Image 1 (tube, rainbow, N blue to C red):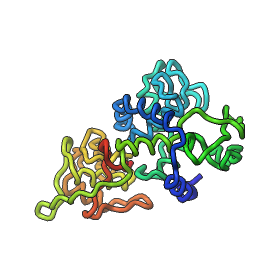
Image 2 (spheres, helix red, strand yellow):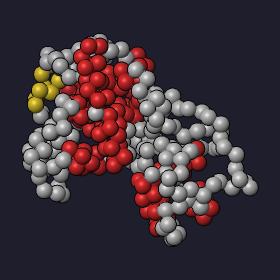
Image 3 (cartoon, rainbow, N blue to C red):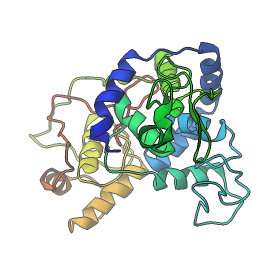
Image 4 (cartoon, rainbow, N blue to C red):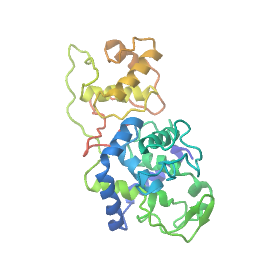
Length: 303
C-alpha cells in the first residue's frame, strides 16, 4: 500500500482517536519511559524516532530486551519466524541494539522521507507489521480494515486479528496496546509533541550561513540535516545537533558531489546541498521556519 493511498485515512483516524484502556496503556508507557535511553540510542543508530521504536518493541517483543525487534524471537539465535534468518550478519547471541539496527534498516523506506506526522508514522508501522488488514483476511476486522497493531486499546478497533502468520480470527481480541494509543498517551503526558517549534531564525553573518562542524548546535544545523535528507541521504533525525551521525552523512554527501569529505558544512557544501536534486515532496526551510526538534517535549523528527 502506498502512503498516498492511506494518508487521508490515517489523518482522519488520528484526529478522532481516543484511548479506551488507559490503565493498560499507562503500564506500557511507564515501562517505555523507564527505558527511554535505550530507545534514544537506537534512534541515533537508525534515524527512527525513539517512541516509534518503543511502540514497535512493545508489539513485537512485549518490551523485552531479550527478543528480536523483528518479531520477538529470542536473541540467542537468528530469527525463526517471519522474517526468518535475521540479522544476516554477526554471530548469535545478538544484543538488542544489534537486532534493532538490523530490523529498522530492513524496514527502511524512501516513500516517507520524514516521519514527522502521525499519518506517516502510522503508515510506517502498519507497513512494518504487514498489509494483511488492508489487502488480506484482516479486512474483516471490526471495524473493517483496522489493524490492532495500530489501533488496539482505542476506539478505532474492537476485534479481529491474525492469531498466527496467515491465520485470521474475526472474533479475536487483543491484550496488546497499539501504536496509536502509545503515541497519543506519550503526547498527552508531554514527553513528545507533533507541533513544530517556531523560534526566531538567527541572523546571517555577512549574508552567509555559518560554517558547521561536529559539536555545533542550533537552527542552522537543523537546516543542514533537513536539506541533506531532502537530497536523499540519511535518514537523519533533525535534532539541531551536529553529532557523529550527521558528520557521517555530510561526508557521504560530499564524496558523492566531488567535494573534500571533511564533514564540515562550509559555503561550498551549502551550495551543493542547495543545488542537489531533491526527493519528491520535499520542501526547503525558507529561513522563516524552524526545523522540527526532537527534544523531550518537542516536535517529531524529520527522518
